[in-house]
Image 1 (cartoon, one colour):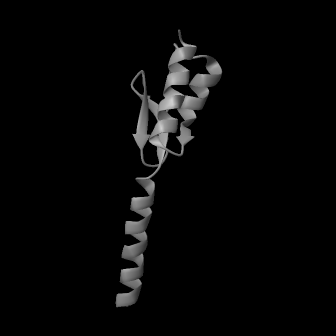
Image 2: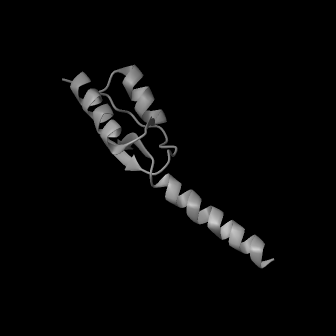
Length: 82
């Protein structure tokens, strides 16, 4: 029984630590944001400044393997609005 509890606790800790090594691009209100962790449903979000395709991608969230990649995604989206 103790081993089962330790295995579950270890899995939970390792899983959480892994999520903190992931990033994704999403929205916060009407602002594109980089989040640390795993993707989550953001609900119905309208970003009228973005092209329809880009808005749909942001609403679904865009995975990034690093903070640098997430920043490049945000920069690309920003430049597309200019």
